Image 1 (cartoon, protein in one colour):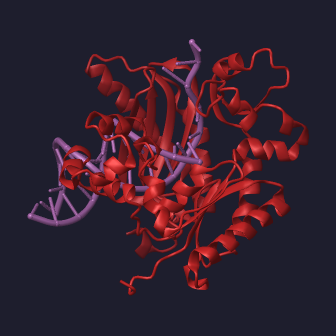
Image 2 (cartoon, helix red, strand yellow; image 1 turned 30 degrees about the vertical axis):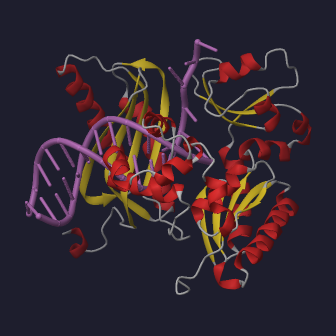
Image 3 (spheres, chains in turn orange, red, brown; image 1 turned 120 degrees about the vertical axis):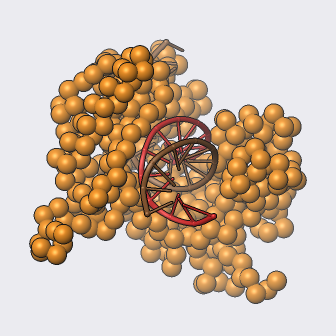
Length: 372
DNA sequence: AATACCGGCGAGT
DNA sequence: TCATACTCGCCGGTATT
């Protein structure tokens, strides 16, 4: 039993990140509802709420909500501020903070623009106590350097650290010690488990599984029948607080760019719409020194259904013009294909995805051998 | 029978 | 009421070897 060393994992989550970044550059916003929006450009207020500060949340604004909803909720509130997304600014702050986190631990994993895991197991004896003091100082360092608050969770694996950090926000500090793992998890409704969204929650409720305690005791075979072998196993393990996944940086597996069309279309000017996307992808591929072996398109229909088509190349590419040409072909045949089915395809949003990313393959071969 | 590829779905920030 | 832009992972079906 002692041969398996326990770990000490810290989860860091920057509070209402984009909206807090906006507060940092304009302190007056701190006392007002702040809503950060992705404007789609169709109409005045078309688009969705990306995130908002806690003042806006308290009034009922939520991530993903249409901007027009949020405006209705805050109508008459002359303090409310609606701001467009400024990803470059948020990215630059994220990079500085992630550098602080990275250098605070030998093992580091950034899991999104505003979240990271640290594994500090090797450094301390009472591991969770040591990890807690690292978590405290990282929190402090982030506050001093960037004037941003974050929440932290400390536990013996990533799942528990993530559940811990989610349990108290903003500015939270939550440690789950081994003896408290089950009493922390079991009372929670299944929908609170990371990875359980509305669909999975509904399925679980339909078999009378309401809490993580229920889930933890549900027959494994039954879960595998309903959710498949993998998800069935993971649901049960996670409900029991079991997670052996390592803290490690994972290379990017796919890149995509997508835009909302000015209006739903049964066809559109592929070059005009897709060229900026492919150019952006080329830029990203080149600066990341990677190439993509699969090029695909993403279409969101007028009914908000997500459709995709893809083609795997014999040689990975970085070329924007090649990506554009393939994407245009895929869209073209996709429209034809649905015309044959008698279905008129109405597209709302159009995108390009590059996947099967492989370290650097230059488009112009240097040598004959490379060419053949 | 194993692997590759594709398209759909679900979930997260 | 209106519904972004990304990323990741799994599943089942079909094609390829």
